[in-house]
Length: 108
Length: 114
Image 1: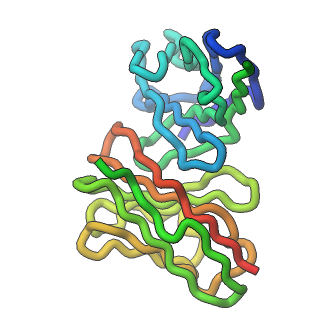
Image 2: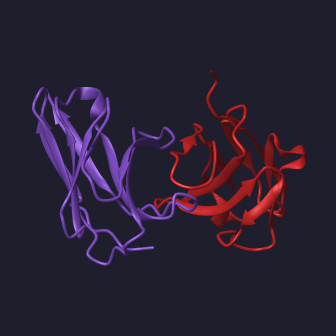
């Protein structure tokens, strides 16, 4: 599975968009990009995934660059409950490889 | 629809004892996964069942760990004998089919080995 690089931490003001970047320069052609998050000691929670095209669901949007070497997860209107560690995962859906993720803190 | 459930939520045992963790996946989910996070490290994959068959057990750390899924419903993960370094949180997840579907995680079992 391809390796990902994420910032260790980010802050975001409540109500503003949170943009979480992820670099995955070694991604191969058939590998998907997945985003999960873990809210304080709960189990990880799926957010979104994509291959080439940008994706949007009720939780977030995923923007993948044309060369697929990086992506950005967008939470359009962050709330305090979005404070969590966000994981960008590239590779197999069957064996998720969690890195250290980005600690997002939404500030009031 | 009930989510993935795990039992117990916490377990404290002494080194050398045996512990069995249980996971009940979402009804109808053929795929069941075990992960764990030990001592502040990253969450690591342990193994993957498709129904009652072990599809991938490449993440199992050693032969002190035994996972079963008889009948293809719930799964158990037994640690025998437990060691100090086994302390951590054990997560179970399930998904509807192989491929690209999301994995639904349970709340985890926190295991402490003294």
